[in-house]
Image (cartoon, rainbow, N blue to C red; front, side, top):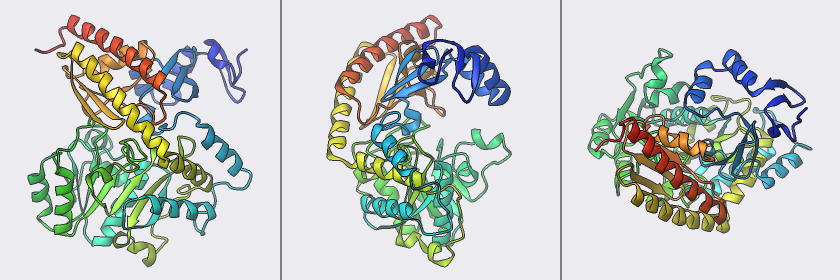
Length: 440
């Protein structure tokens, strides 16, 4: 019989103490029965029958023992690696004194983290509002902007993704709203990315509370903003009295080589949204950092938004340690070095397969690999998985593979990753060619 410690040794009799499955096959069938039949079947059909068991550093282990280098990181949730020892130790220590806390009252850890977030954010930020996940934080940001401006209009980008909650859903692609009969209302406007004329037209009405932008749109495949584009958007916002919300859920916390990706553009947004990696993947927490102009409702009616688990005190301790690690000069140096080596390595791979790997979109360790096939990233994903690497295709542009190495990835692992990537890209190209998928 396997145990929690050694369950990855075999596929049979998966006993984890609190629960047990007779085999991986049984677990997958029950996943379809009791959890999510379509998603479970999709991964099996895609050649990714992954059931994550042990996880450590930048490695995932399937329940059968298969090891994978994780360059998906669940959207950056595991920037610091899985179960980072410093974060784990902090949570263990915190649980001797703290729990979730009570969201109605001033709280020790919540206040300490808020002060730290304000200190490390862009200039002008003054207060923090907490959520338990990114979608909730986006909803908070949009409500905050509407209160501050007394306007209801929201502008986002075509093919945007900001989460699946109520207001966040309205800002994103209609794939995720139609199924729930939640089509975009007239208050929500979308414009193409990198189209400043369309943005200017959208703001000209004067009724827009906020423009919400991922600094680099993740689910759309990491298209990079053209030089001057984000700066021009901020200038338009200032001219029209509109707030600029920087969604830094995936681009923040040193992924681009700076703590907040937006600072590379010299922009001081009105609102920053952070989540995913904020607790090192160990506790649900997200945060909305606002400037004084945006913070009015907190003084007007502090009960206007409540979140039972938002700013849970144990999560705040995890976030404080995570923020400290991400802010260290040694972490910044590691990101810049890894980004340089990986960028050069990917360009070498591209030189071997220029008709297949047609584009490399990179800002620090935010990387999108573009392939010459409408679903090219799915081919590459499958072959990477077979060759011991986990990366995911971009949901709203499956030509592009999301490729996100961790902030603290070692030089040795970088070299192994590039070797495995080169092999997988070659094999995926061959498979696509056999199926007549590569376009000239």
